[in-house]
Image (cartoon, rainbow, N blue to C red):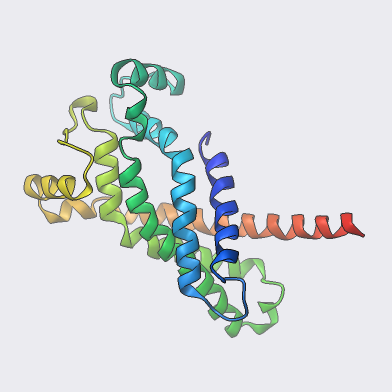
Length: 225
């Protein structure tokens, strides 16, 4: 909760700016522009979100040695230093880029398809379109990137409560180690709950964002009159 607000502010601000820069707001459908804008937005927002995500992961562990957020931050700083909060940043970015590229491109494609099917809602972009397109995009993106999410989580929690440690923060090295120890299917652990989480989360996120965006645009227009 503490990390999501600032991270999403950076996330959508960067996306809108980059979508304009890459030509995504021009007439027509531009999936590459949406994907590139989403990838750039994830790099910026992950710099804000990763430290709190590390804290979240450690607090979620069974028999977590931390009593709360501040205790986790203090102990991690004392025992491992500030770099511990960014150990998984590279992995998070590597995971986030394909996730957001698929997510944003799928969302924009979903809006277009639904708008073509239901032309009565196309102009005003009805709430149902945002919920449906957002949920579908979240489900697809979360399924595709599950292996990278498994690797990210393992790197964030290494050494805590007896969890495995890895020689470095390399995604490929961690993947090889996991496959050697547990088999390739270990990289798909948690796919279903991950999809069950991201589907409604994306639907809520996009519908709330689009509604807020429309409200603020109308408010700005009224202020200019």
